[in-house]
Image (tube, rainbow, N blue to C red; front, side, top):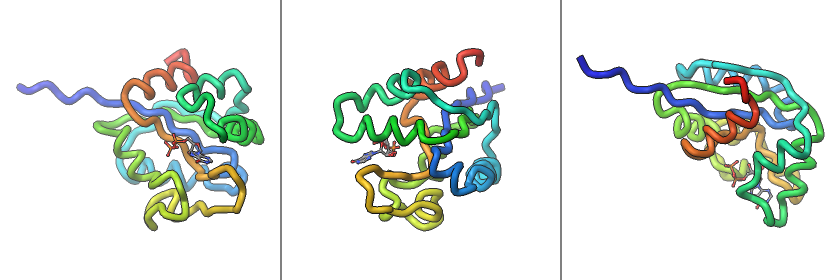
Length: 144
Ligand code: IDP
């Protein structure tokens, strides 16, 4: 008998704009409706050190401090989501980084817009590869 495929995990964050605007339930609903499994979920206030690590790949970019400040502006819902090809699948649910061009039907396309600020506020984060997923899950949920 063939081995069952190993489930994959990704880190999802509902960013402070998503929490403030009441979209936590809608984001989780879409994840579950798609058929993925929630492994952990917690409303958290992230500190500067965690966020600097989380966004280490953006260190030095002009928007990184504004991004960290925004991510500290209120609670975030951090979640670990599991399923075959979930990293790619959640990014597809999330849509393009820029909510103005994110396709309707996606989380960002349906729930976010450009507010004219320097920072792109786009409701959710999802890990962008297996290596970053493992690193980010280790940062946010060290006990998993
Ligand atoms: P992603 O979240 O779609 O993977 P990344 O390029 O990893 O996009 O960027 C991380 C986050 O940084 C984005 O979700 C967005 O909030 C913010 N961001 C990315 N590029 C820009 C930019 O050019 N200006 C302002 N904010 C940006």
